[in-house]
Length: 433
Ligand SMILES: [Zn+2]
Image (cartoon, rainbow, N blue to C red):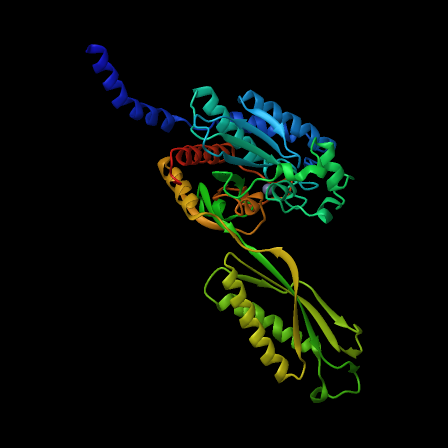
């Protein structure tokens, strides 16, 4: 009877104890910073920059270091055929698909030590904390370090089955093509289908990353909850005028494509500014033909870029610009044509439930947070196609990134990893179900 009573009390108290115990776990800022420093040695140059471009000797050495840390965290490490490093920890329920989290460790040439790295070191920190405390999860966990993020999201694109043959032939900064590079890191570009994960086969994907912008730092906020990665659309805009002598043609007898281009550029800026929302529109390139000081431009070609999180909003911005262009073109007798360029970068919103889970995790840890879009591309945008995806941003000091001056404090990194841990445990506990 006594044993039975003790058992019953234990059963009642156990979930409380388990909760209290997991609540106390937080990431170790010193360990994370020390690991970021150790990783930064691979590809560091005399100027203080890190050039750990994908498939370089430095990348290979960095990957080896990361695989060592994964093993130390009790993970089973493998490299998939796309070269992605995956460290797996089994769950207690074999019927459940894995929760995946991670980022990348390759850098741009002359880059810094936080872009991508914080997400991988943070993911390993989560695995190590669970390992050290002996905490089991129901779901298997997969910690990922994606191949060649900076070269075009190579590893995640392969994982969703969208890495094209032509992408494999692209020459990288390492001096190897993507195909050769994947071989060099232990993958097999001829069997990429083995790296593909089907939609629904991953319970959730979470990426911890530095913001690479200055909003969190400026507003003194701990955590950014990413609403999604903005979509990008590009157009070539051609204005037809009439080339003529700049000295002999009176001002009222001109069809000057450049003047129309100037008016159109101002209109594009005005439309994107005045429309409520966070859309951006940019004219970043212009070419006048024939292009001489003494000739009225007969043709001008300019670029138009529109970015937003919402595809319908992007279309709306374009239609407003197009209508205004028709009006300006008619008024100046210089027709304006739009030809869209396929950059294949639709908006990638994150999962609504995942945003809520991340927000709750930050609140529970006493950290301030805000929703925000990501203006930069990330592996998470690919993963939105196959799994409920969430993204956690931590502050970048002064918003500097892709530079040796990139910096995130140890405490901010640890805050991000603690939110990641809580998020993973909440998903494991059924928060998405
Ligand atoms: Zn990155």
